[in-house]
Amino acid sequence: MTTQDAEVNWAVIGTGFISQSIADDLRLTPGARRQAVCSRGPDRARAFAADKGFAVAHGSVSALLDDPTVDAVYIATPHSTHAAIAIAALEAGKHVLIEKPMAVSADQGRPIARAAAATGRFAMEAMWMRFNPAYRDLVAAARGGAIGEVRSVRASFGLPFGPADSSRWTAQRASSTLLDQGIYPVTLALDVLGRPSRIHATGRVRDDGVDLTAHATFEYEDHRFAQLSASMVEYIEPTASVSGSDGWMTVPAPFWAANEFTTQAGSIARALTEQHRTHHDRRGNGYVPMLEAVTLAITEHRTEHPAHSLADSIATLEVLDAVRDSLSSPTARPKET
Image 1 (cartoon, rainbow, N blue to C red):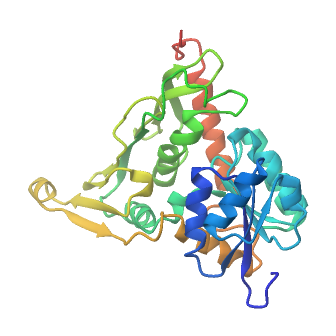
Image 2 (image 1 turned 135 degrees about the horizontal axis):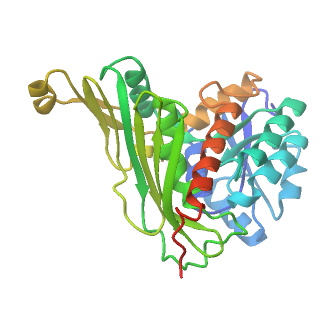
């Protein structure tokens, strides 16, 4: 660390909405110091630094990675740039926390893991949901038998961020509802049910290859299943549920950031009339638990976090690749005209 009291000097690459939320939560994170920010527009970087309390503003990624005062970087740039920036940062001796998805495919994600191993630096995809106390309790309860044998998962993330022809989404930026929204329902299904035996998917895909909506069914050998949906052009109720032989658990909207869930279990009469609520107070914008865990891991000289390893991220990308393959098949792909 660059300070005697084992603080981690954090930098943020990018000045958009996610960077702003991360900057606010870094202020609330023990052991984290807001050190530097960079943007392609130097004026934007300076304004961001002044507004969010960062010590240094840089006008390029290379300048930030050359800054010896920076220990760790949060990468909040377009999907298509994540892998290259992460590898460059690792090779520059920086620890990295990469906005999800950490790469646009499993093949692109594996070199990040190799670079992290070669440099001995910490690397993780910023899947903040996995550090959310309510989500952790939900998964632990499901695995622990709170609703008996888990049989199914239902999860959706559909919000109309813009029209289908929006110029904000481009194939060059790897815009994708699967990568932006679908990663959360998929992660929940994998955490509770494991890797599926079969994947079926349909959805809307623009002519340039940008997927706008996706509806996937995961099937398992013992007849368990998951029904998952994502969209960036329409509402699909952004809640989730986990159902089992003895009851079900429900997570309110937005499920990926919820600080509570309810459990209904037991006899039919009891399950329909009694509800147990599990609640946690939210810390900041919701990123604090993840930022605190990563900051502590870095001070302890860890290279990964057990709650979300690079192998976990690559496994999720492999499943997302399979969903995309199913979505892009001739029978599953209604084209946008």
